Figure (cartoon, rainbow, N blue to C red):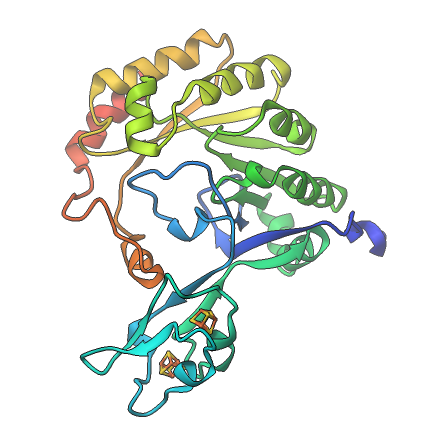
Length: 307
Ligand code: SF4
Ligand code: SF4
């Protein structure tokens, strides 16, 4: 492969994580690339750091040495956004913070970190290819995720094109909430699309995610018409009290069937792994006290999804 096949438009996008050795989001061993920014704000989101379109400051109190030993962050912040609170602990006054990142630069324990960094598509694919040998042997590759990766449509397309030029298998995880043109542009460079359908009722969808699902359902149907040969997996996150009934799952399955072409259909049980991220970003976790759907319920729902 020619060295200049990493070359790209030079356009930069905002990436918040590159996670290696995933086994669940496409064929073989994969590297997941998470792009920042999403128009939705799902109550159950497990990647809240992917919602904002800007870099953000995260504070992990468990890593903090504490201001009695180290107060570098207080000293360096020109906006007085880092303070010692009434218990002698560090607190970030979020409304004063402009996300300049200077406190994170001086924090010796990485208790403070900026989430989101600007990269070019070439830089992203180069980072992914560090594990190239594993992909070749396992049939894996790059999976673009988020946030909603198609919110940064041109950047996402640059990454996928560059990855394909380098011979990588490509997958995309999308909520489907994007301009149709974004899906149309990436289609020829995608081997496998994971497409979320959370429920069919537009009002219910809006109440739980902030936006109606009409664009999502329309995009799914157009995707099937325009790219009939693409491998597609529809995914539904199973959320207690929202869509965890056989009726909901069967209605989505019927919608997939009505599109006229087969697709894999997969259910993902809600989990609380993302809860600590909300605290680090100074956000409120809206699903507090709600547990994952149990095995018996998932068995019933999986049967409805696949029968
Ligand atoms: S990111 Fe900048 S403004 Fe925000 S707390 Fe740190 S130093 Fe202060
Ligand atoms: S610089 Fe880091 S370790 Fe030191 S007090 Fe601030 S957050 Fe804690």
